[in-house]
Image (cartoon, rainbow, N blue to C red; front, side, top):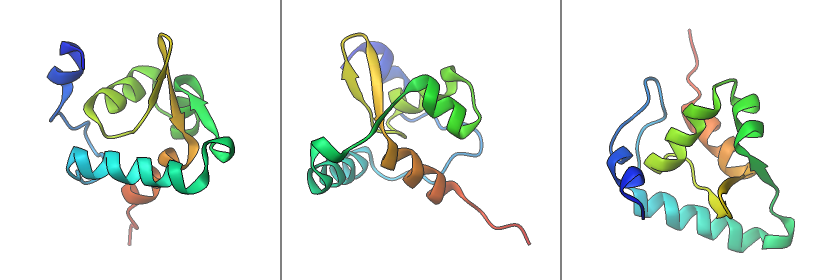
Length: 97
């Protein structure tokens, strides 16, 4: 792991979902991928994730480096499982009332 990824660990973007231990998130992401089979997993680019979440690409990169959002590194870029994005948003959802 690079030093820039380590330095971002522990930081939480304002208003993000409650934190689970990183190992638990990684295990859950791996279980989801293994369960679905890699052929059936749809991966999104950082730009696509930013568009879905209506945030900047930099915010997505911060979430990936902090471990809030699991991602796979492909060459010099990241790919995020679509299910991980939906799971994150579902966990972050709060009902106003």
